[in-house]
Length: 105
Image 1: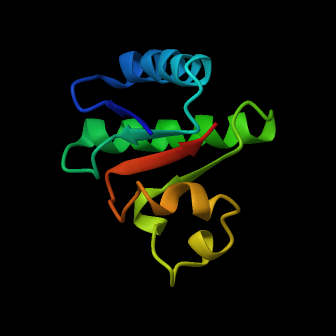
Image 2: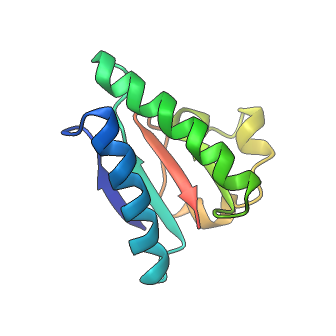
């Protein structure tokens, strides 16, 4: 799993880095990228996470990524996790974490 920490970025920079990070991970044959965005302890973290979720949804629709799962949904009782097709890829390396988004490439 490739991991990128976005805590130090402002929204515009984070969005640019997201694109770069996904391209890098694909080019280097990673199957999962872990986006560390924080869980809203600052307004910037919340803006970054919200922006990422919007972009990732668009990327799924365009088939640029396979799927994504918010860290807070990584729970066997969560309906989003139950319906997530790529659970097996995440089981070894992911965990419940409100400040992370897991992306399947």
